[in-house]
Length: 265
Image (cartoon, rainbow, N blue to C red; front, side, top):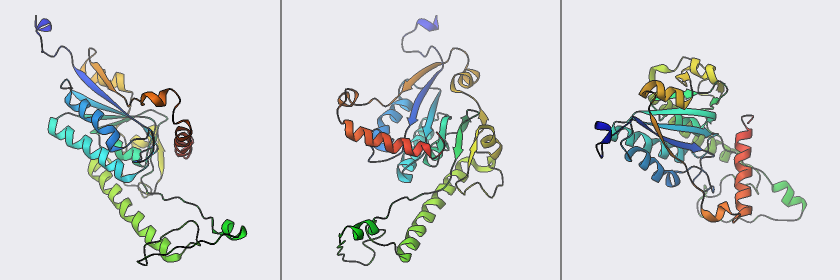
């Protein structure tokens, strides 16, 4: 009779939250704390789920947005006392792995790309091009450190040293996060935090993941064959679905494609 009583929970349920794409505060369609916050909140609060499963397919991106999203997931998990499981699809690298490490357990496909625990800064230099075409770059600042790594001026050693110091600080934050979340699961490996990547079972052997497994069979094994899945995906605005903002969306798509291509995907 319990099945027919209103407002009672009939079956175990798992909220499924998809985190897919490049992590960026400014990229249209990318992952950011602002864009994901409503879905993350719903996943943990609606229907009292027995667990939250985050499905990850991300080559990384902004370290700050990665940290904000990961912190939100941990905060809600602890407040609601709900376990979090991460399931990696093609890739959880760099910031994508930061998100995976926010989970209590990480599952991967046998061919998933995992790791890349490092920090990257990429740019270009166009000062030779400007000189050849008769352009002169004019920059005026108040403060000697105000203009750093200007792509239209020759690279300066002191700028590179300053940038490297910044990247090292962010890298240390990343390492601390992984060590805290994975604790004694990690193996001793000199390459662990060099930006190296591992595939599927190799990632499990390194302690970066717990097992090879897919969301439906793993969740049925944990919560029974009657478990129900409630899925939360980012929906594109109406005008984007019908071709508006085409040029900007195309540029975002190229940027995302390039980020995935770094891992052969």
